Image 1 (cartoon, rainbow, N blue to C red):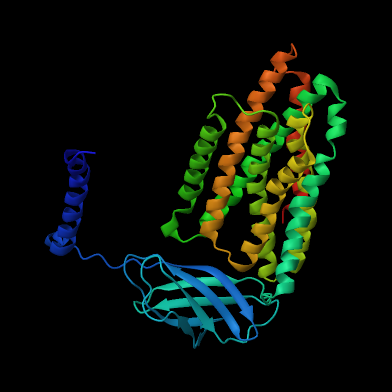
Image 2 (image 1 turned 90 degrees about the vertical axis):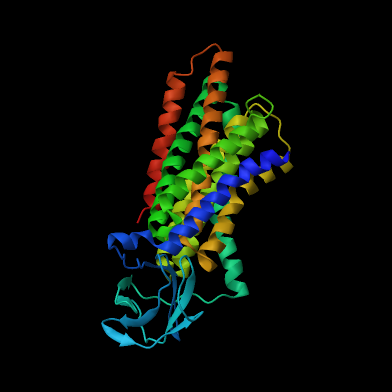
Length: 385
């Protein structure tokens, strides 16, 4: 690259930096008699309850560094320690430790007061002890993820012999059913991601984070999938299906791990059973593009791992390192992956229907698409609380 190229590229950036620095130093707003007060915002990202009291991870997202001066618990001022100590700059986080004798199954109201007098409220709906980390617990969370992600996907793939004997119309039905379940997964993943985006600190722009992550993931996967100008089929298409489903299962693992970490063991058990039933259909979807292919057992293991093991990772993240903005980002990526697979499955269904002398919009395809949505909606009944 020539010096002229680099100078034309860097000069506007340098001049912009100079203009911003000049604005900050000269404070031209003072000529208007305007002296805007600092904006303070505080978000609680994680709550841990143990025998020593209550620990809360907070993140500041204001315009200026802020100091937490006092903390009220259930209407009473309470002593606290902050780590790291000092002012919280924009986007920084800290742990607040309250040696408060919380009461199991009770509601507790916490209010943070800054040195400027601004207040921020946080509610612990039902106080439950947070499970302590241990090797046995780590293995237990992993087993939960295997039960939720790997087992149902593997069982769903066992429907493949039935799909192979169903004939051309049955094949179209299976592909359309896969398309229907993907539509449900896309809506479900976006809803979960946007919900977590609402919980994230405003600095992360939760909703935009989800949509932009979905867009980038979709474009990237489409570019990879069509890099040879041929749409993926067979094992390649099944692999993309497994990837999209795996990213969705990552979100389910986050929900389960987070519920157990919050002390909601009953809710976690309910979610495990519900997600296991819910995910059985996902294995059928992965097997559908392979009903006319010869696939080695190693490939089957790879597909099951790709679709199911992210649930294990999600369970660990939800239990030990949960953060709403990271979870929203991961679910946004999952939504983009699912959208890419939807397009590829729809295109595969179209080509298959034309090759068999039929139409993409047929009784078999409409029935399969409807069945996929209905089955996913019905099994979701067990995971909605």
